[in-house]
Length: 363
Image (cartoon, rainbow, N blue to C red; front, side):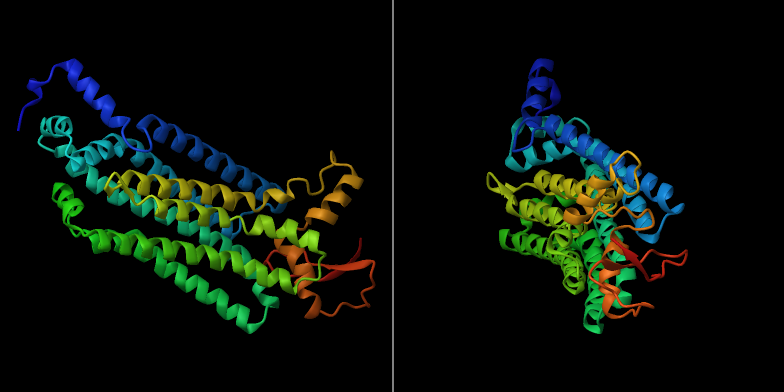
């Protein structure tokens, strides 16, 4: 194999530049987009924590799961920046680029050995971030299960169990199913794995990710169907509680780009997995942003009334999305002290133990 000395410094620089701009995602675009998405995820998550602490004075389980997902995403982003250049060299090697072979040979492929190990850590952290956001959604829905039917409760716990199993398979199992090697020995997996085997494994990955997203979308639909709220209010609440549908779109896009120029596009798969993790944290954080106008003195009462009427944004400082849903879902199971007329609605703020406290309030 020719040595690096067979290329002039100008030729090496030109080859590296060409390699980093090859494919569907140039390296500069990849790093820039990941940095922006992570920044937005961090801002959104921190904003959610500020809202929760200012409104209730403490964080709930769903907040803690989301914060842990953000930490995993932070480490995953750092690793993504570290291994990004090697991703492009690996893809060039698989394509048979002679310049990539010359550049990689200068350090005896030591960087590529570390690359595969770091890639495994990156995949584990990215999937952990995604599934802890899903866990945050499930924790958010848990208080509502107290007024749901047994069938919905069984579906909820089945979704929890299926999500946990899917996380383990995607974070740890999928890598070893396709390639049991680590280090530079793993490069043979690019050549030895059959197209059918890779497509099957990637289809399983997309299916598990998509189905778990669908379960999280379906649960609030069950709750909204039980609710007696008007359709526009249901839509307003439902949009914020079903933001995980955006994660489903990411999983579809990732699955659609399996191959590029006849080879497995690992950059595309890794990139969209990381994008989904960032968007998951953002979407999970936005579930409480609907209440940013709650009780704000700067929002006129008429505007607050309009927001509640059409989008379900309540003017009660003790309420959030969960209590807005519970006030109607509990209507069938809780008997107030007086009859509920058409001008009254059942509200359900939470006490310190996150238990529903039913009361009647004029609206």
